[in-house]
Length: 121
Image (cartoon, rainbow, N blue to C red; front, side, top):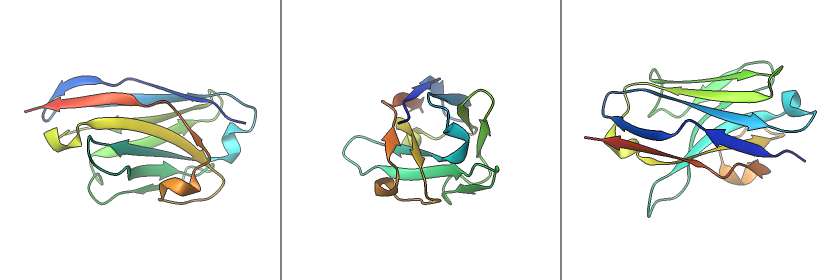
């Protein structure tokens, strides 16, 4: 069992930056693939980025070059550094844990409650 708690969301102007954190409980954090997803009002949840236990990362095309996912296994924490944010990226951002290196939400077994990111124009 893994419990996930996101933090770091807020209001930022277009072009600005935010760093999201996701703190995980459980002794097996390092073995999980950790992912970030986002969901805007009226839209489906979409994949943003994932990181494997060894640090291999994968990004959605829409965020490549602007977002960076990282993890600190000693702190049971995964991060999402978001730069050059756009208004259309306003959404609730969720972290999730999976035993598979996947980019689809149903492959993730554990989810946080989400943190709101609002990008103003």
